[in-house]
Length: 194
Image (cartoon, rainbow, N blue to C red; front, side):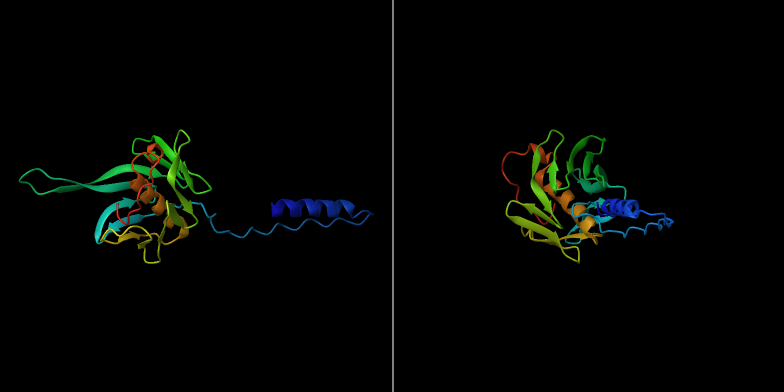
């Protein structure tokens, strides 16, 4: 908006210059400074979610996230595999692994489902607010402010405000279940591990 106002002022000043003075060519506009991402912006990148030392979930730079699953049959060792469970876009759109849209993080930090239902959590700057809990990620990637689950939750790669917000949204969606907008009126208890 400031650039538009400056342009209008410049045009008005040139028009009011009057007389037969030669008009100097307009200077090249200076490159706009690169601004920090808006407070509600999500960012995509490699994120790894640990409970203690155990890697349980990861998000890739393309926004797809996976959870580690285990399957054991009697008498056989457990087999682990990674299962694609969905994706998140930089615009805050959440989709399942089959591409169906399940909601979007709005500019005010709220999460709205496909039919307009608002989830029981909200981003507030670099924090996730769930009921009376304010959950953040510290500079070491450790989740702060949630319920103590015994093993600290750590997110590797959450080094920028945008990546921290993305990690918090993913955790909130896991805490509230597959369809946060279809939960009953109760507030989920924040956890420090999925």
